[in-house]
Image (tube, rainbow, N blue to C red):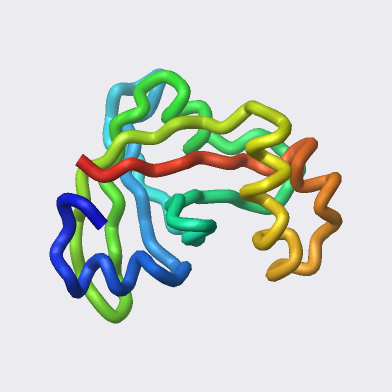
Length: 121
């Protein structure tokens, strides 16, 4: 993976719990939240259960800059940029393995789950 150390790249090959820090769209203050990331065909994506809107997604829509905090087997704070994925075909492809892993209806995930791709600086 370009721009990250080998140990970090190995961890990014699999999904695990991490935190992200965004900038609050209303307050301008840092906001840190625990999430799970997935590596889907080389794309680092963050998703969540379908349903209600998430503040972290709204913050990333307003300002796509974030810090991606690895905190388990490797600790690292990685500057990154987010892209909220809205294209239906792309959502279907990237959410399929996540829906399978979480045992959630794929169509429901495509319709209403948050989905963000992360690119590291």
